[in-house]
Amino acid sequence: MSELPLRLQRLKDSLSELEIDAMLVTDEINVRYLSGFTGDSSSLVVAGIGTSILSDGRYTAQIAQQCTGIEVMIRTSSQLLPDLTKSALQDLGLKRVGIEADKLTLADYQFLSTTCGGIEFVSTTGVVEALRMIKDESEIAATRRAVEIAEQVFQEVCPSLTRQHTELAIAHDLEHRMRSLGAQGCSFPPIVAAGSGGALPHYHPQNVAIDDHKTLLIDWGAKYQGYASDLTRTLHRPGVSDAFKRAYEGVLEAQMAAIEMIRPGVLARDVDAAARQVLDRHGILDAFKHGLGHGTGLQIHESPRMSPISEEILDTGMIITVEPGVYYDGDFGIRLEDDILVTESGHEVLSSLPKGLDDCRLIL
Image 1 (cartoon, helix red, strand yellow):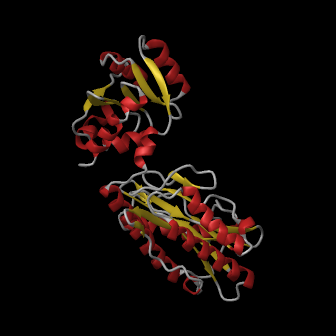
Image 2 (cartoon, one colour):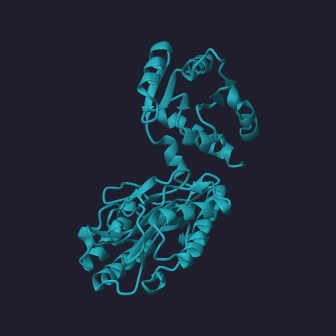
Image 3 (cartoon, one colour):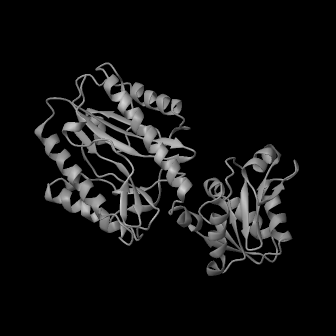
């Protein structure tokens, strides 16, 4: 990937600001982002003079295929990864090394700090994650395809549904179809919730048939080349209550108002506030029980986070979800979610499934 040297350079450029000589990257997702390596049990040492990947013999061939321009250090059968890390850091003559404090285990930190004489380990958090917020062209392309796969599968599954379909069967069908279209699988376990199950934001599908349930909430996404999509639609059958219809229109209006706010320079919490103002006007704000959205990428939940306490500012290249929802215990839940790319001139809605009340009828 031609973007990898640029990603490494962005991290190297931040070393002086952090007042460190190098960064020890131990989080596997961050290792993949910076090096292209898709294996595990490996780490990176990123210094101004170069980058080394530390791994073991199982991955020698894979690293040769996936990582270019990076020094490779393979531990022996008598070494553990912390032993190799110690040797690598000492051989480079480093004085101050940044660690991912929320990723490195306490045991590994204690080993390195007590055995690497002359090296000061500096606690950092979110350094690589901040770089990951801004997607490059390859990441945007992969996310687009992840969205396309998820949407195609949804459009295939919905017309095939019968009253006998269970939540679990629908979830399994979604995953099977996404894999058949080239996805690695689901970007997260799908949420398929009939009736009152939709009132639980992180509901787990059960062996429950659609049967006479009036609503069906489906939250799903595909993972393509490591990148996640995340979509939600709430379907309804004839005879759904007026309360559901009113709440649905409020959630839809809130989502549209929030999306219209998205552009570079806008505070993430202000986008969240735009949705809450609409929900409040409709008298359903008390039923909104989570933040408005989050970034997606190599992980389904990344920064930025859109909530009332978010301090992050939207910037070109971010991909975020907008997913207002309302939840009424024992009755129903409604959530609408789309994936949005922040562009130089504003935003682009990557997902295109219809979401009006009449568009989301469930015909069985």
